[in-house]
Length: 581
Ligand SMILES: [Zn+2]
Image (spheres, rainbow, N blue to C red):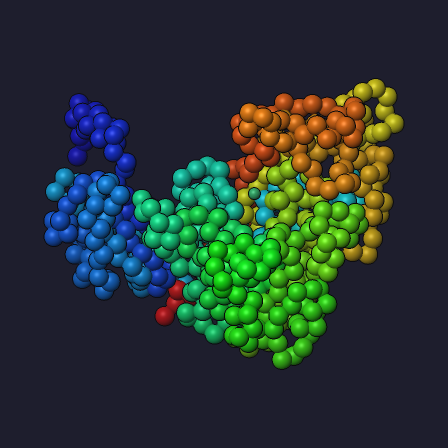
């Protein structure tokens, strides 16, 4: 029936005035959530008013909710002074279909719709998920130019993920914002649910404690609860960072790194390799960042894990046929990227000379995990692509994109003899940045006149890549002119940063970020570029641009066109049959 126009306007004004002074009431999971049948999740209903539990009516598909779910409600009579909340922990909906939840209180009515989906039987033995953190299209292109070369318009080779049969464009926005971070974007891949910036494995409710928000199950937890498969987590960032953290954690704040380290220990993942050792040692140990005396390294050892702290220890532990569980940390913080480790020896390479490459961690993880006859799920993150895109250091980002390609090649080689393996390579979000020309040192005039565009760009003169796929010289006389689209104040040098990662901006006395004067001192013709981001922002930022996903193996044919990031989870659990009875 058509509502008379006048009444519709009146009700709009009425609700508008209510939301003007009250935070919106809510139900979690949120409207339009897609939920794997049989997966565990918490339901939370937040009313705007204080009520008695007996006054609330909660219906699921028209029936009282307690007829369908067995969880007993937890009642918070007035949560943070904002109204009454009702929580149902660890709910499971095993039947696929459309669900509608309606919550009524004397003065309120809330409603959301969910889509619960089942999966067919398991189709693949192994899944390997590569995350190129923050990898944008131009990172791929620069990596291809540097690694494969290009002659008269034709690339002389392909990156390992270029020729995979399936490609999709992925939307990465979160529940709260067009722009995502690595916590909520990875959480969408690992849980199939959207969440907010800085959150993982939870919906962000009005709870004040980071760990009390309504939880959703991660793929690692699903696998451990339902199968005998092995799980591996590999990252060249701190292992407590957002991407590896979202495999196993449920927190509002990705900064809860001690909690995330604890979750890694209790996750039961068979292989855990990366940086971030500072959170695995008790606070009394020099360099520890823990706030307690727990020694997680000792605990991994007690659980029977082989331990590795250097590249050599990693390789010998993984080669040993008896190794079924392996924990390796190789740096107190984020590990060093390939440009520094292999060529320039800058950043922290002299201090930590025995860090493995992402390829070695990937090979070791596959070697150990594939000893499990029930198959494995391995997540490998090339984290530093993002860590170098932020400070506008495109050469370092390109080298780590080449490293990701090398790591993907190892997985492809494994899949040759194990064709029942689904391989996915995807960014979690993108960055700005594009190739706009070629810098020619021999062009006359001030620095900006040296940027060749269109026909004057021609081609760069990087040397042919070495056996590892990298050019051994980047400060050549004809270089890619790469410009990021979002930035703080900085000096554009149009030169690679040979002395360590670019630090574009530093704080001035008023607390605002201004161009780092170091680069003007190093290069007197550097161009001052006024920032286009708020002055409290020290680096470039993530973008909402689509992320390009590549995939191969059984199930990969489901990746196509434009997809939401939660659908990546859906395809993985469908391939693994995690929603079949
Ligand atoms: Zn980032």
